[in-house]
Length: 179
Ligand SMILES: *[C@@H]1O[C@H](CO)[C@@H](O)[C@H](O)[C@H]1NC(C)=O
Image 1 (tube, rainbow, N blue to C red):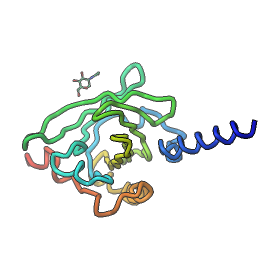
Image 2: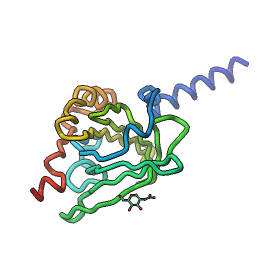
Image 3: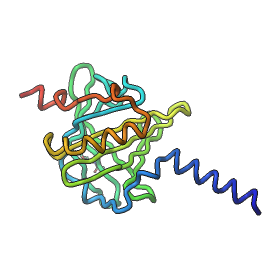
């Protein structure tokens, strides 16, 4: 039935565009991302969410793998001028490297690039039907994280995020202010 076939194709296309399946890692394994991390950059199509005390201003400190394959993500965020340590559980999906979690609605978390030195995470939240996108650059150390910059810029450009919407958060992290 040609009509049904093309509707199916269209749906598949929409899904793959909407969920960014094009960037999913084919060879992702969660073991690659466990351990400690430092957040270098945050970018969004809505800059206010990654600015000071914004809803997505986060300083990721570590990822642990739970027995059921989900990830326990620890991070600091700022609230009323103080750093608060929190964690969320990212639930695995059928797509390797893609997780979901609830925070102001449903979020899709996708590992776009992972090396021994850096990790790039793409977050998408469908709030009010309009996608909010956040792209994060994390490094095992600051120096190692810098190796991901070219890839990070490509991902933000691909997501239509302006270079002026990339926020350097490394010096804002909690231990930087305590030093
Ligand atoms: C996630 O890790 C934190 C420590 O960073 C721990 O307190 C918490 O119990 C863990 N949560 C789960 C569901 O394992």
